[in-house]
Length: 283
Image (cartoon, rainbow, N blue to C red):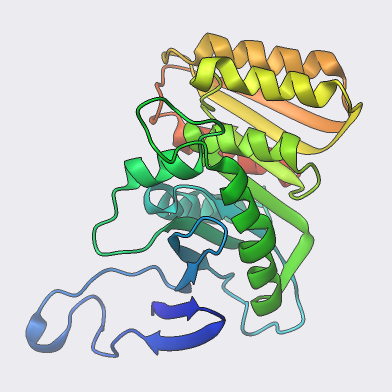
């Protein structure tokens, strides 16, 4: 059953899906929505970005039965697209013992019909993009994660704050790398799939160089991937080589080019391999 919860201004309300759902058939045989067992929806208003977010949550199967255990948390950017995919990928890895039980938190936007392309371009870009007013909001969005979402999760769920992973694709992958260099240690693992390293005149290369001027260490496990057939393939390879050449102390890094795939089609394999790596399984 889908548990629907909302949290606005620290006030929690819980509502449960209708008990009419039985094997996908409701009253009078009418079709009912398909839900993800063990999932929850929580809503947050950010004081940093001024925007409303939906947080899709998937709890481990034994979460209620084992009230003392704490779990890693996988934070998924663009949850509107990738939450369901990550639920499936993580389930397979758990079955095959390549990844542990974990809480999955998909981050997306509230509202009846949000324009995801516009909203994500505001939050996930690191500098203002000409012709896109309000873009370049990555610093504020990172503050939302660090000062609002993560403390909320740690206070309301049995999380393991030492074992957090951030995952994103495209602009989400760019923001994942931005977080790695801006707030090192905030997460223990990072999965950047097809990161938009060429955005803002190869901005990712610039903030990596800036970080390297004052830092010799970079703690964390990092997985970077790109589709073989997408225009980002060569720039991402260059970015990975630049990072590896730094020989950062504490950095564990793996990269992969996904054969025969482009910008979005590489996500299933990227996420599978990425989670295996950052959680300690074979890549």
